[in-house]
Length: 167
Image (cartoon, rainbow, N blue to C red; front, top):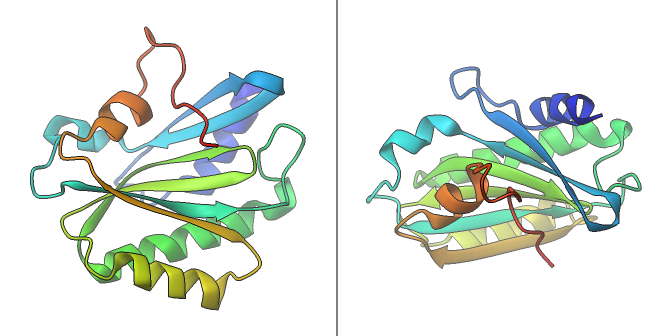
């Protein structure tokens, strides 16, 4: 079953071939499944001192199964939304995608930014204009040591959980 969700994760978050993300699945309480996609190519340079801010952004969706992962019929839509969000970040010219976490009918992308100017306003407008039917998350905070990437997204087998669920 984990292989199925790992493949689903690659389909959802595959991105450019040059990035080659790694996909990890973790079971949580209530038979919920979390899927973490991490861009391991960033680890040798982490933390990047030019990108000191963490953006966690994504959507809540209702097209999910009993385990909290997207239904097969929603995968293409979720992939398109993820790509569109990444394009918005790229247009701002300040960020790099570190990974994605899908859990409990939510998908969140983790980005490291050099500047936060206009990011919240641009994303709020973007979500309202393009995806008003989904609830959106936009979290911005300093993370100069890249703790979210190095301690939560990047897997550590000795710790057990890949990433704690967001409430």
